[in-house]
Length: 108
Image (cartoon, rainbow, N blue to C red; front, side):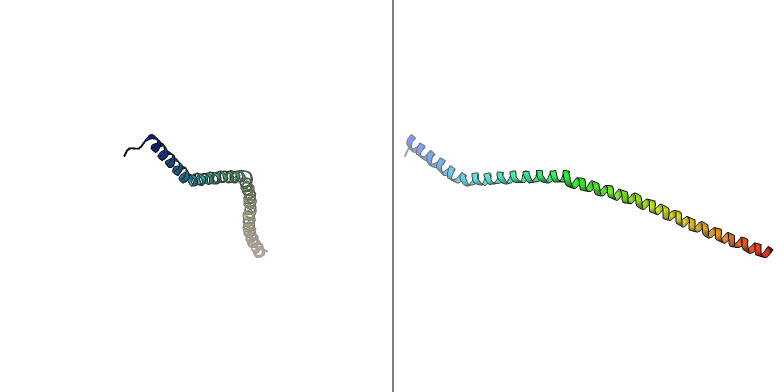
């Protein structure tokens, strides 16, 4: 049994129709995936812009504030250290003055 050209064309048309029918759901799925990818690209771009414009600026402000606090803390610690040194010096001077008074009382 030999197929004629008409038979081959009819078979070709049937195969084409079958292929189109089976590919249609895949095309729809691909279209949905493309839309999802596009949405995700837009969302990612929006997040990047937010990071650049808002979050980075806020982090910079926080860092500057912490730097100012750090500087103030160091100044306060320096003053506290100087105060402690002065208290020690006063203690030493008071002790020396007490000894001088004791000697003066012994001499007098």
